[in-house]
Length: 329
Image 1: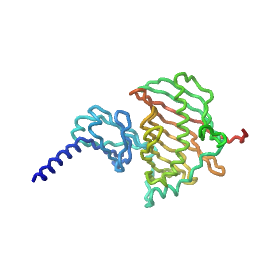
Image 2: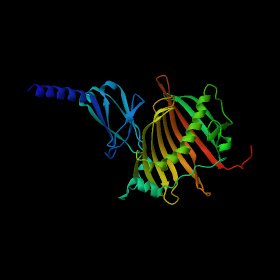
Image 3: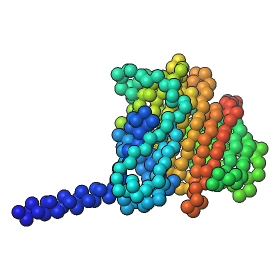
Image 4: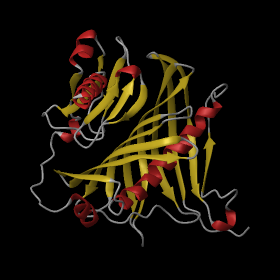
């Protein structure tokens, strides 16, 4: 009898603990689950929803008046205020409106596995060889609370290095030309380097997704001349930037099987620059290896100054490829 009473008491305590959590469900405007959505509490990354678009947030981590926001690549951000009504209900559903470029997708009826379709429709990307150069223009617009703080623009050169030219194990180099006033903002310039390199090397990770069991790939369907894939790279530990996670929406040309554009969300849980939201257009140099490179980049990256979130708009354009003659050291 005592055991029965103890079991009942423990059950009541356990159910009481569960009731202290908020169960958040993320859906599309078509009421379909959005798996692995990114959840933020007061603009700071908290975690990912599960494969059903659900995440449980402990009551100890949120209080009434907190803003909970959700991001998902290919959809518009949405948020809500954690209220007394929601805290009593202990459950809430939020929907995200799809981006315009997803509205014309013809959903595939193919029964093939998404990873097999990815391998079938996407070429192994080649991102350049030693001494390849890329030139272009850039602009960074720094905003605080929607107020313009500063603007930086100029030109850049991105170079892939030969093993003989590597310094400190560097595989690439980035330099600037014709810069505007950068006094007090010089560190932000190197975000251009990181963003271009990120957009450049992410395409290698795309192809690796089809062979990585931890990668989540969904074939969305066809959009005009393109196949569309959604890729989620689950959180992994990065020695420099803590936990790193990313989502990609990729448009791949049906004929060439090369990527033509992508939307990228990339998040780091530590460091000064935790979040990137990019739109990238890709071009292909049709040589022996069909080399792919970012020809246009737009979007935002954000960082924190103490508890204040600062958002920077960035654009990189007029990017072209140049293969110089190899020179001896």
